[in-house]
Length: 417
Image 1 (cartoon, helix red, strand yellow):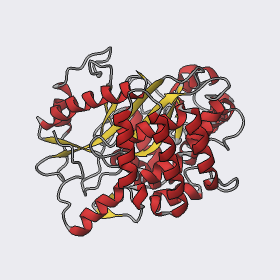
Image 2: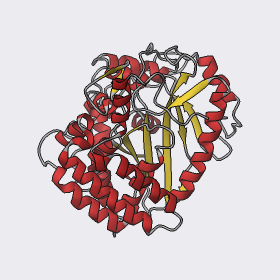
Image 3: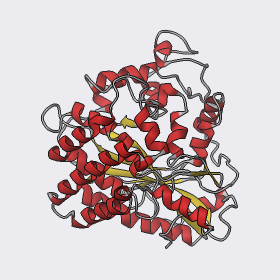
């Protein structure tokens, strides 16, 4: 676990994963047939070993509900990551527009459409069965949510970029990132009472795989190892078309100790890790998973904000101090803690979250000012701060305003090709 999930070294690489809902441009509430999704993807200049990568190295995948995800390759720094991903997304949007389809950036599908699985891979069928046993939240997550995931190096053994410090800051930033970029106030065409419905959905799912590991002190590698072993096994891969379902309540520790139909292998452990969805997931690098999908090129701001705060030691110190008032030693772990729940419901309308958010944006602004070539990113971050948290607003409020005024006729995506 320590060697595979946490690659130790000075932070340098930056990546981002952006997810999009796909809507029919003429009739957004009509389900998009899988054939049209595949036709759009097949029109792209794909290559790579599995035929799913753009020439830049960015990987394209379909999610269970038909969402499209673009995963950038690791870039040498923030500006390179943003420039490469913007070019890739322009290509992706054009390909889907040629099929009469639009990419919609929002944390939950805002329209009342049938929520169906478009993929029948054994993994997703096992996930569907596993989550259905505990209510509707897993199915909503799989077919009705989308996110921006920022990926950064795990950190060094010690010093200002130490792994344990970056791990702690990534988790403590969670409520601010949820609040500032909340963009999912609607589900099935109706307001839910939350600014980030997506975050509420995640908080109601299986806690053994969606809560953060035990408190963020000590060695993150030990905490993560305990977390992985204590999580319930979601699926067991089998050959010859057999279902991948797992016995109810089986943890990986149980499996190691003799439960299950056969002894587990190292490959089983590696696959088990891919079925865990905490707010911060170590994949060798750190993957921050708490940010709602954003409209247009809105993904750039959270990517720049997170990178600036984690990679600049001065900004990291400022952010940790600003986030300290949000911490609570007792109570549920994120994302079920009080600060995370307030972030999902009130966003930056909550005074404490607004103060912490503005302090983090100010620290990121200063850090971007020290980063060569980041002038345009600094401007984008500053404009977002002025438009939203400085006014006690988040992107979800734009959706709600449009709904109240009766002007919302299509998905909230202003960046059509």
